[in-house]
Image (cartoon, rainbow, N blue to C red; front, side, top):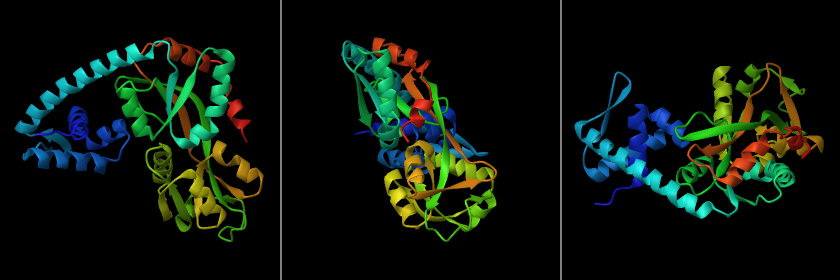
Length: 301
């Protein structure tokens, strides 16, 4: 019988934290994705593994046996990955996981900072979603990753280095708004374009909307940042975009920034590393972050 390790990892995390939502947060996926993977594992094994009791996730007798084996498996895998990565890392370049928006707008300034303080440090970017970067960190395939709004995750540590606002932007010639300022409540009547999952930005937007109890019309969802800019410019909706990625278009008059009277959401960027990793290149990069001036990212606009 072939067991899908991704499905087994979802069961392992859900059982460990007794919550689909908590497992999803730690694996940077949605709770329905965790549920689906566990159901697929149950179907493959032909047995019920989990059930709910008083809104808490519980393991069946068979589920407990599978979970016990999963604990042993993932502890062994992590030790092996760490040992292999340590052997490969000596004298090699530092690999940084990053998704495309910070890769395009943040990394040039960050790489320049590292080059000036650590001229011998060689860095290569590995593109992927936050979930993919986390998996690569777990397997020790990369040294660190640039992530957004990272919460505490076992065996990982996050070093914040930059905070930016999410700007609400509209097309320059839009007739949906009469001015450049609105209240949060007015979002209820406006079409909103939402970014794709896996970057941490969508969660910030959803948390902000939930906090203020507004439910905008979702014009389109699951879109990349560059495509969102084009759609907003064509007045197909409004969007929250990370400030550093859109300030140039606002300054050039392509897009219009809309001020939210109550204030808008923010995102925090961190350099995330595996707690057990102790490479020389990584230590240099982390030390250099202490002298990083966040204004260098504003210079990109």
